[in-house]
Amino acid sequence: MKKLFSCGAILLSFVAVTSAQQNQNLNNTEMHVLPVQGNVYMLVAAGGNITLQVGSDGVLVVDTQYAPLSEKILAAIRTLSKGPIRYVINTTYDADHTGGNEPIRKAGSTIAGGNVAGDIQDAAEGAQIIAHDNVLMRMDGR
Image (cartoon, rainbow, N blue to C red; front, side, top):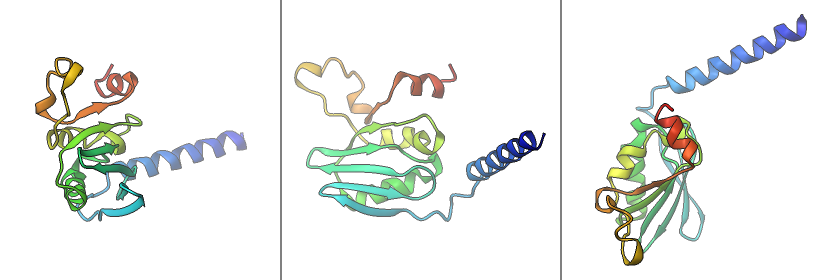
């Protein structure tokens, strides 16, 4: 019985912390840009970290944190590159990794040409999002 009670207490603690993180006020969140190596950077704020690769063709973004941080994320990206955001890669479907997908995607454009030009019909409409099918299904409510 003690083990069951302990497990229940741990589970409740985890749920409380997770709920508090999701309901946190992100207005005062600071965005930190940390160099990793060469043209690779890490953005640190609330939630999952963002990885950026900045090149002459544009910017690759890995994860997009929470939606309310999108303006701060874009401002941080613009301190590193004025080039377009070309691709967003999601590593999981959690909100702290995918919340900013829509505004970050809209701020970019995809490279399309050669033998793939006809395959990417919405290339001019924003950056392409790359993720496992399970991410799309989970975000789509399936």
